[in-house]
Image (cartoon, rainbow, N blue to C red):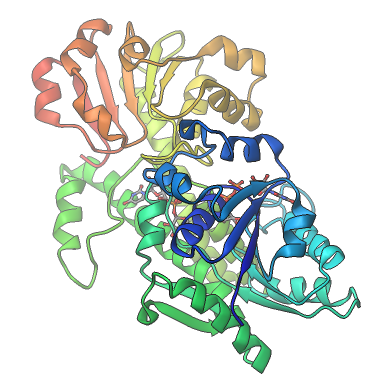
Amino acid sequence: MKVKNICCIGAGYVGGPTMAVIAQKCPDINVTVVDINEQRISDWNDADLDQLPIYEPGLKEVVNEARGRNLFFSTDVDAAIDAADMIFISVNTPTKTYGKGKNMAADLKFVELCARQIARVAKSDKIVVEKSTLPVRTAQAIKSVLSETGNGVEFQILSNPEFLAEGTAITDLLNPDRILIGGETSEKGKEAIDALVEVYANWVSNDNILTTNVWSSELSKLVANAFLAQRVSSINSISALCEATGADVREVSKAIGMDSRIGSKFLQASVGFGGSCFQKDILNLVYIAKTFGLNEVADYWEQVILMNDHQKSRFATNILKTLYNTVSGKKIAILGWAFKKDTNDTRESAAIYVTDELLEERASISIYDPKVKEERVFADLDYLNTRSPEENKELVEVYEDPYEASKDAHAIAILTEWDEFKTYDWQRIYDGMLKPACVFDGRAILDRDQLEKIGFKYYCIGN
Ligand code: UDX
Ligand code: UDX
């Protein structure tokens, strides 16, 4: 079977870029991305490509090439489902905030709603592809929702987790390490797998397309994220030891990363990992392990998150201690609010939690991020519910210029590794600050010698 019409439900950080690349690479396939959020769809359709709802290097060029040709963004979910022979589900699956599995299990309500909508609308056979990261055996649940409609339509469910990282989404999509497709081993299952393989084969070599059973595929996504996050927590645990002993974590990273068995990636010490996936997926893994009575397995993986929480808190505490145990009324400038560079995504960003701790000490916070808007910063802080929105407004100011943000500040905290921070006129920043002027580098990106020569007191994570 040759796929001609694809529909993707969810025009977010995963659905948007992924479908844009599929459309670019498969001009014969019509790709329609739908979302219930009207604003999001209208932003994706904006004539000004700088207004796309997501910032990703290279994204606007891809959208520019395919949009209107074979890439469409719409809020008409029913029509897109009806026309499609393959439907990707790419809606968000946040951690549950209520009921059984609260704060741990993934909330599948949006996924189930999608399945019900597909069941209601579909008049012809469809392949349904799980793109969202889901707990193991969700495909089974989707299948039962779909097959109980009894209108004679046949559904095949595939698991096709997305491994792109934000900030490098387009290059990751164009050159994936692997494409993973899980499906049933029945004849129909194999046909569905082949149909999706054929889509990717337009630009990915067959050697890099891996097919497995559905459960292996679902579990592999959670495990990949858990292993990556574990590396970050591992190096962050060592960063604390480096600070205590006089070792430099950057040197340790380099030294261990040159061992080809360890490898050099994901060894950058930081103020803690963020993003929509790592914490959520590990909590999910922990929950699944507990469900099967595997408590030691659950505890083992939970430690990765506890270490990450500790790292954020340790960083905030260090700022407090260095500023003579009081930051009340002192201006502290936060550079970087996104959870990593080259994205405007702030979900679970370490900056939110560090700032929250400083606000609890009544610090006066100024914030600058090259891509994050003021409304987003306040939405993130208000969401924590530690203080009222009025208090947050009173204590926090968001700037569009880093020099303004740091003016009259006692300290600067670097919380995202944006490249532009390295190119600033640090002498000018120093001149505008109160003395002693401190820099707390939560990403170990600045040059100690340069800053100390200017006169800064420089504190670097892991050194
Ligand atoms: C995705 C995945 O789906 C998630 O499971 C994975 O772990 C991370 O990536 P992401 O694309 O980052 O999520 O989420 P988000 O940017 O929130 O986009 C989801 C979109 O789905 C939103 O635009 C939302 O409006 C839309 N949505 C949600 C629907 O269209 N219908 C729904 O019922 C629910
Ligand atoms: C991750 C996975 O990499 C990706 O495969 C999956 O599809 C979604 O989750 P993402 O969250 O977009 O991607 O970004 P990633 O590059 O993995 O970074 C996650 C967090 O870890 C960021 O806060 C980043 O700053 C931090 N990190 C990463 C470190 O602190 N040190 C490192 O060495 C690497």
